Image (cartoon, rainbow, N blue to C red; front, side, top):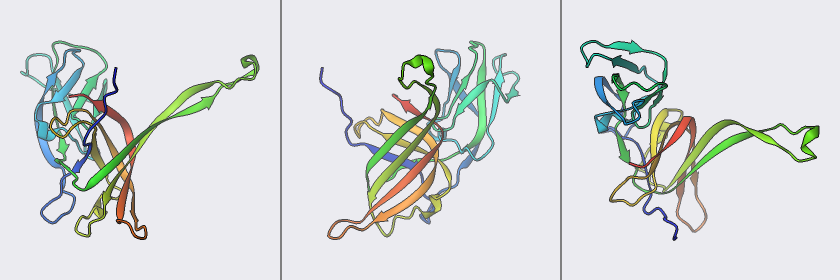
Length: 218
């Protein structure tokens, strides 16, 4: 069986405003979410509101009477800010969910020709006298970093991204479907310009993940 490779990968990030600066996240209220087949996972219905501002409050509400009454919930679930997903610890086929918060509009960041995503797991050594001299490890904390490269352009400014907590998406599929991707929220921790003699000037931005990164297939 031949390997399947990605084609025409792309990097998407928050949209710019009319002045070329980072556009602010936009408030939304009481948006409905669709319950998935596992009766635990909910995805916000509006595709334009799926990249939530992690730096601002998010209110999750549930109803078990078909929306006649709603109750805010503060625990028993996890939030995937990049993707607009809420996953409850327990399944409940009678639960409806709605959410209020702030969302960024994402756009393809043109001119970026390459990106790299690295997921790390810290290994803690637990070798003892019974391991016969062999090192044994248990996994610890997980983290991710990413970088995206572009040919430098004097009109393309990302200075206001530095230090901001932003959702990003890295596509690995062809440009017609935009299906296979990795999504997460992270800080832009570095903005580096490289000027090699006799070659094109490039710019590299580095992301440090804040929480998980999720692999999406649809």
